[in-house]
Image 1 (cartoon, rainbow, N blue to C red):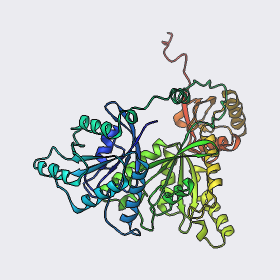
Image 2: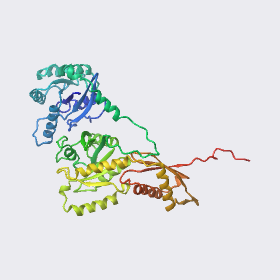
Image 3: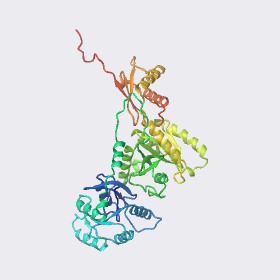
Image 4: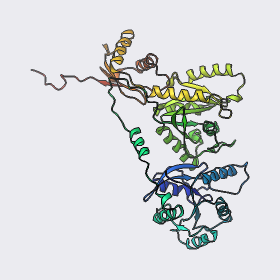
Length: 473
């Protein structure tokens, strides 16, 4: 079993930069603005020959428990309690502050191993701040530069010394390694068959929506704990944070994302970074839950987010949150269904579930709809069935004639799933009108039960065997 390390310190000392350095990716948002990180973010770290779980945390500040800063501090303290070791990061360039002194006292009271890290030690004039770090009483500080990767060997040695050789280098678990290999094995699928849905694979789900729609509250309710920072303030979440939990024996990896406002309103650099992180989460996920505020549903931004998810080819589910605040739910639900069909024609049949992240109402139904939508998104249809269907629909409604010549659809096959994509061999594909493409798409949805997921149909001209032959004189 590996160990867990929490990165702690006051705001703007370089915790997220160090986190990105250790995980080898730019997962955490980094900016000169203090207090960018708010939720605790886990990651798999590699430091020379060490492998461990690293947790990025919010900057610790002195604040009341009801304030946003106070709730951020509570999240950080939970990360310290969960971790086996803390990396206490101080700014060697700026020097110590009273907050650093109080944090050092808090870490001493916890009684867990602590490695003192003096970041930004490459800067001119950092020697004074480095030597001041000795006054914290947490041992010898490790001088590093998270930005430039300096001092990583010394940091590795300090972690091993603090934990001990046995804890730092645990015995490998052979059974666990075998399970990983088996779970990642890929098998080629024959397009002539319809493989069964694999309900044992982990499912990646992204939760997106406008600010203050209740995304973090929803995930906390799923987990049964206050894992993510929540509150009445809009725009609390900045990073895309992933959490894992089991639902009926299946691993669900869920991504909480920053709220997406209209593009014209996004001016600050930090918010642009947050939105870009949300877009990456959408592309990485398999199913995307778009959270609507049921008290003000179908804002223009809501519709644009759904359209974005559909264009990215993700499986989408609508969740109307704050249902406990709705008066006359039955009449309101009827109105929502009518508006969903009318305002989202590109996602005909999309599943919509009324929920309440505050009370837990509708969460089981939401999860079942997520699984059902993922099954459709992974669906494969045999070539034989598709060609029988193509013959039937073209007989019932033949393609139109263009310039006096009838278009012919000859052959159809599914080229991929996730989302379902089909190729049709036909004459003059560039002349096929968009209305007939919609007719085929809607027919596929209805006849093969594929509601609410993106369907791609590509048209390809058949090869002409006489095209390259010279004309006979």
